[in-house]
Amino acid sequence: SKTPVGFIGLGNMGNPMAKNLLKHGYPIIATDVFPESCKEVQELGAQIVDSPAEVADKADRIITMLPSSPNVMEVYTGSNGILKKVKKGSLLIDSSTIDPTVSKEMAAAAEKMGAVFMDAPVSGGVGAASSAKLTFMVGGAEEEFTAAKELLSCMGANVMYCGQVGTGQAAKICNNMLLAIGMIGTAETMNLGIRLGLDPKLLAKILNMSSGRCWSSDTYNPVPGVMEGVPSGNNYQGGFGTQLMAKDLGLAQNTATNTKTPVPLGSLAHQIYRMMCARGYASKDFSSVFAFLREEEGQ
Ligand code: NAD
Image (cartoon, rainbow, N blue to C red; front, side):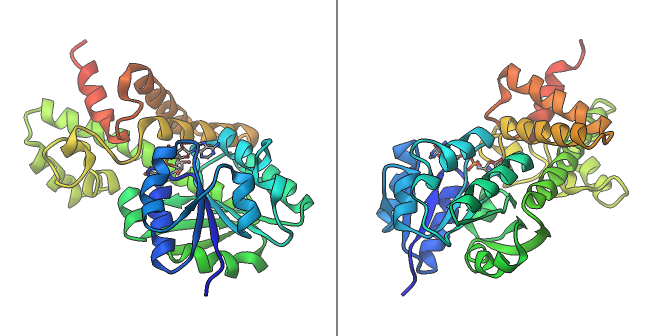
């Protein structure tokens, strides 16, 4: 039978990911600071413990899915963190989207304890997490990739090796910067078309058969009523929060500054998503930039 897998962070993404590991027959040892988050996986048979240290005491393969860099530092290196109890030879996989320099720091700290740390952030939202269709971007020692892939392929359709530790985060940050720019571009384009008297459904159809087509226009259109089954059709609830997108754009800015790389549109996108957070959009899906632009119009 399979040995237990630890899972820390059972939020929007972690919850369905842990369920898929359970489905594949892995016993799960889990924890989350918010007890309510643990309920569903506990009912499905996961053992819930009080701290990341206790998870590390009971499992030698651990996946973390936390909001941001400070949470990851706390869970690995905090006073009740994984590294307090980690077993030699353990495999620690962080699927949170965080600063790649923090991933490197966690890898160095894990190595001191004789454990292996890999970064494996994901692309694909809650839907992809539920249907095990995520894309994992993995950074770390190549000889550990096979062991990581065994677990990650239970939760995702694509598991891509990117290079040394931190490169998974690099790939993820680049993708999300382009996604943010594309979403704002789609929202302002759709809004302009509507103001020019075009029917939004017709305009989306034309864009999607023309050179302006992108994921935000053809799969995740931000205008209510253009598509079904996307957050714009549900008052921008669920999906990928504006606050998380603002965080990812902040990470892109840090890495761009460190490498002296010009990212003018990424920078503007960061400012727009930060302004949205200040105006009450923080927990709405990031496609609500369309609603934000509508609020601004006519001023
Ligand atoms: P979330 O806020 O829903 O879940 C995070 C969970 O971590 C929460 O349940 C929280 O209680 C828990 N947590 C925080 N600090 C903790 C600690 N110290 N110890 C134990 N548990 C702790 O976030 P999410 O939407 O699941 O996203 C997780 C990560 O995945 C983020 O980095 C996000 O950017 C990334 N991501 C999200 C999506 C998406 O569509 N939601 C898509 C791709 C990537």
